[in-house]
Image (cartoon, rainbow, N blue to C red):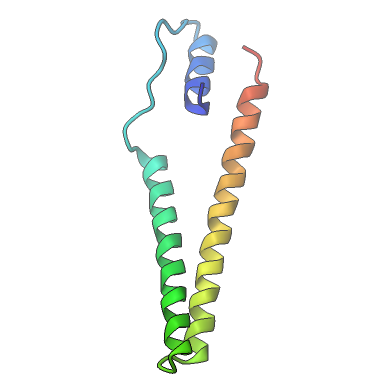
Amino acid sequence: MNPLMAAKAYSAIQGGAMPTAPVAAPQQSGFAEMLTNVMGDMTGASRAAETQMASAVQGQGSLIDVVTAVSSAEASLEQVMAVRDQVISAYQEIMRMPI
């Protein structure tokens, strides 16, 4: 059972209705799209940092560009980790809810 199914089941029980069938996960909705976009941004920033580092090693790039790209990739990774931590926390909270 995933967190979405648990949340919908809990919501249905609180409303007085018992779910008769497993609740299917929705197609790419707002939250899922947001996560996909954040992961794509993080991957893009990481690749840009790698490209800047390769250019600097070949003598074609500047150190400032490398530091800026690496800093951007680090910020994107920290954002993804913060979202991950919040999702895990929400999942653990849902699992502690009495049914």
